[in-house]
Image (cartoon, rainbow over all chains, first blue to last red; front, side):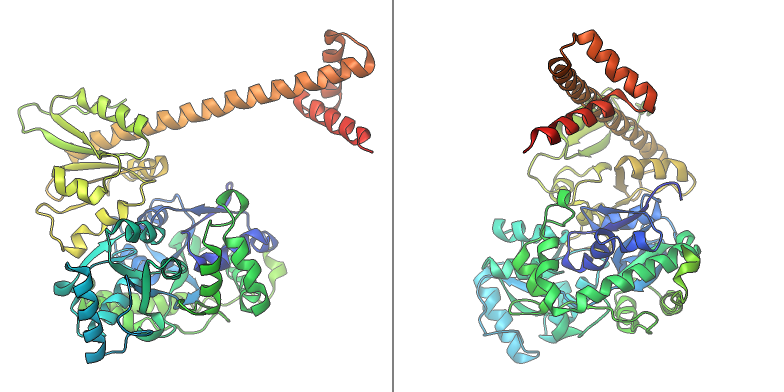
Length: 332
Length: 205
């Protein structure tokens, strides 16, 4: 490749594996020259993969699936190369929690919602980070678990994750489902409270994956190097004693190789402390992933039909079984 | 540059320009306004893209990809709540992959109402690409000019120091740096920087 491999990502704490692999020279160690493209929105990530301004990206499965089916106007086969993280999404709501702690399912949760809605004084406006996101699916399930219908009872807005802070300050949204550390940051700033999230709705669901276009997927040299470097990057993420320094690095400015994230909220997202949902990082490659619930929901929403369901199910299971290189030396 | 040439017999096309860079937004609007068959508006500062679309009912929206609120536009069709009367979608020309790649690479894309014919959209997208490319070039030229000024400063500084140390005039100092550069196949500015760094080292206790 004549130019560095360009990897797209957003300002989120679960971008950590790629940040570590790049900054600690792990990609380089495996023979890859990489450039990180911190993007303003998920649409840019999806279009970047379709129109070749990106060679790989961190993405959630629904967007990769829908893009792959040509729902962004141009059919472009994308494949998940590696799952990076599980869970970590927060459901946050403006103001004060009528209950203590997370909302229970059923009647009690519904009562809490009604009390909260009365303080909002309008049909609640909830945001998700993209239409085709796990956040949308999680939020829909969360609301349904307390008997609230997304289509009738709330208004859905779309905004990139870091924007929710200002939107809450300005009052243009009343909450939403957002990735780490932005939900926790909103709670720490007393803009919102945590009502639920990944852990209460669909514990340890697949969240971020490294997704590549088919042309990159077919390049075994590059894929093995990417997977190996990211496997190596997971090790520091699993050591408790590293959390502080990882949060510190991610909070550095973009010029200083960080993502300009709020440090305390990032630290909590790594550990799953108070007001945070813990992000679980991948331990070993090759594990069979459960995307069935997502596909079921997407089918229910009429995003896909039964035939597309089967295609995606096969693709998502097959792609992730890329064997890890056993002899790294051969790829250097 | 492609000029959006459109039949004037038809109703004007409403174009909404959504650019975070006010100078470029104005330049693009001015270019498009030269065509009487276009009715051009800009997203006011501080207004979200989705609100602007609700307010102006555009046929075509030209969007700066650096705008983070593009995702809201992206989801209009799938969400269908609150329904837009005339849903819009990302413009993609399957037959003109080159144009699309150039557009995304340049950082501009367009959305249009679903019934807008590609013949109406493409000239607008081309005009936007050309303008974005011009802005990119201007920025690159500006960067190059700034770099040259910086380099000249470094060479001047090194020359002055050399003149003081070696008690020479400016021409002799310059010849010395040029000679070293030729001998080592390096640029004069590199030699100047090395000279300054070496001096700094020997100055420090």
